[in-house]
Length: 124
Image (cartoon, rainbow, N blue to C red; front, side, top):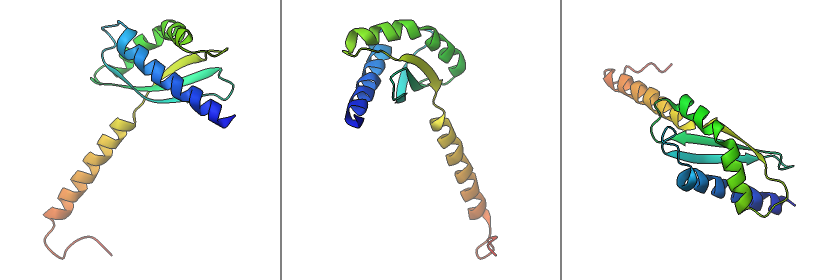
């Protein structure tokens, strides 16, 4: 049963990515990347975590993408041979942004440590 769920999750993930990349004709959304798809065990819902190539206005783009849920779901139904096609919810994947901020903070800390004279670091 777990293998079936993994296969369905992989199919849903791949097909949603293809639909968003090749079939969705919304200029306002731009280029979108599907980073992760979480499918409920009962196949009632699929949470799709996306990021945008151009992160400016990401929340507006996400709202536009949410409006396409019906189109994406119907396209997905045509591609999959399963009884129940899950409801699709889009979420902004902010992991990349958090990683960038963390990298910047670490770089600032490194520069501060390097600016200290030799032997005078703040270790106790």
